[in-house]
Image 1: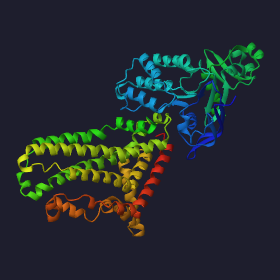
Image 2: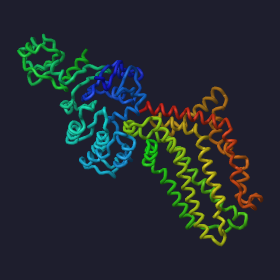
Image 3: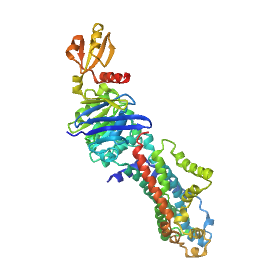
Image 4: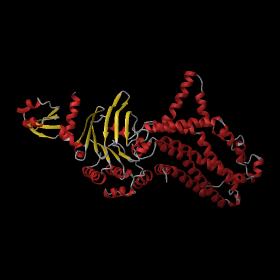
Length: 286
Length: 292
């Protein structure tokens, strides 16, 4: 199966600052991939490169195209919502639908209108009259009405209240996602997307520090809650991170020997958020 | 409708001033001709009365041309800047529209759409005023303002001016688009300061002023490039100072246009090439400057 996104040696510098340092990764069709990293890690730069918004060094193919040179063609098959993107204040909801319908062959206006009707947003209003959350809903509706092979979401629910966020992700999974689509998503609310991701990419200081499917996380990583008396024995198993938790310590292991660990404490699969913290703390201390 | 048509439509949604300013001027000028005082001394000679139509059409044209120039300057500086400032550029870039198409659509609006709107408004205003004044001062004017030949000449002059200014000022247009695509703030200042700095630096360090004369010739040289030496005669004829034209009653606009001289001047095409290069640079900047 050929990759939808293929990056090899992807690099980007801003002056002397390295934003992406020879990054390599693949995104396969039909997956929902979370690109997760702290601020300034390079995830926005990586997304911008994928979307053709920035030049780069190295090799990058998205839907078989070279994004920076072929952004317009790429956007006929991919769509995105960038964290900072806002719809312009002068644009009315009707005009937005009309315009996107006019320039985008894969846009279905009826679908956008249905999504907006669900959110209680009517057509004549301008963006300047809508709240931040409503504007985001309009943007999401426009994007989800595009029959795109690749959808890139950069902090898509920023500024939405919890009901709207939940509604968005429900719609994304139930109405939008099918096996012809692929989603690449970044968010700070890792817990919120954890259940819908199929793969995670951790990025830190311009490098990929973890590239793993959700299924593999369970096989590759373990968190063990260890009481003080077993701590020395547990540490001998070479955890890569530990943190205190309610009088015990949680130790994180890669490729663990589960039989031995089970004797030392309660073994569980770490959540993406916990694994993220554990992985990046190690990267920070190394 | 193709992508370009949508892009132009979008410009009219965003920049409603494109038609609101000229429409407001039409209303004001019509009100002025309805309620203004008519100076009887204007019609003291038969020759003057005969040249009234031409004077009025020229005056109305000039009235619309000045705000149009100012608005176009502002529009060109704003068009690739405002969506970067309000960050909506990322939304536009999420659509299958190339940066070339975006820049060319704005160029089209500035060079063709805006002038045509003002042209139509000037026509509407002058015809309305001609009608109103003919009714109000019928005794003095008669049908002097209803001059089909003069009106047709003005249409030709307008279209000629639209085409020739578009070509002549292409380097200015290109420069403004570059600044609009590049500057992170203060587009007005950036549009003016670098040329001034270059002129000053040349003067201080080399002692010559070739940049000043190149820029100066471009800015003020349009009339001599596109119009013949008869232009001043023509202007005189409106005031009735020139017996020939006044007696014929129809000073010809054809004689003042100099399309052959304009099109055969190297200066025209050097400017057009510089303008095209600057527009290409604006496209490249638009491609790279997605993020503020």
